[in-house]
Image 1: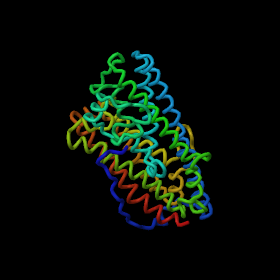
Image 2: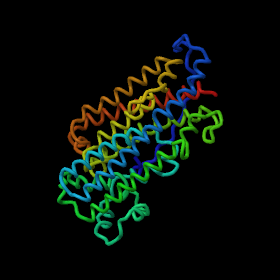
Image 3: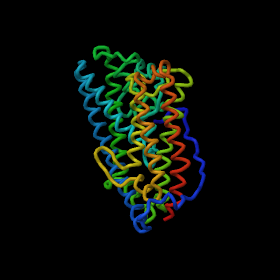
Image 4: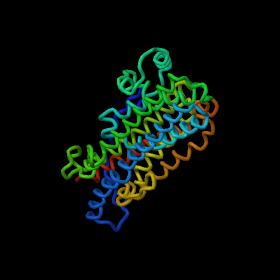
Length: 359
């Protein structure tokens, strides 16, 4: 997610109180107060922690697939490694719907997902005699030489037509160490949320009642909503817009695999998963139910705009690095839908939280 040139814009707030006419009716403050805690508990235990657990498992699968490719460079093993990479990206991009806490504070995100790849430095590294063991990867100062995208580059090749026989011994060594590094990062990220580790999940659950991170429930809710706003901004104003405006396929996020549009759609799907607390087969009480209890029309609006943004990707029928050249209208329509969703989250959902989550 960590584009080298992107900084998320600060969100300006417009505070307003929800009209009593929008109240769903039939719910008392005790129900709402109970739900304020339930939503945080369910987010932590049914979205946040399971997402990182799944990511850790898929990182292990990718490392195993690349190790097998290193041992036996067959096209079947290459196809398996490519599939494992795509599968891991699916979970990671959805986990970007809640980019706060250790994933940002401890730099797990930039250490595994900085892009675009610096071709010159990567070619220089591969052409050098520098060691490419795990510790060497961990000590790389250029973050785009670490993580998903150098692996992608080697697995697909610059033109997306990689064959197993064309992967050099040096490239195989590089991606084997990269995938082990990625596995270690994802394990550490999971551990930072897990009860046996940093237990960040508990710090979210206990917001406003003893949490060492969130003195008030409102602070945890704002972190969650800012995560939703942030990923919409990242996709609509960064990942999609920058290569679109520049008409430059080279700066698309995942250009070698042709996976960029899928990545972007998974980002917005991940944000929707956070809003509804439905993730990887888990289901809990989400923000949507909390919003609907006070203002069902706002929940309906948010749900509709999420669906509009997600389904808009269906009109982009070629890889994004091609779409910015041949399907400009479709790309612009998707960016418009995402930016419309972002505006609603920023201008209506966040003020709703500030007005109603008062601890």
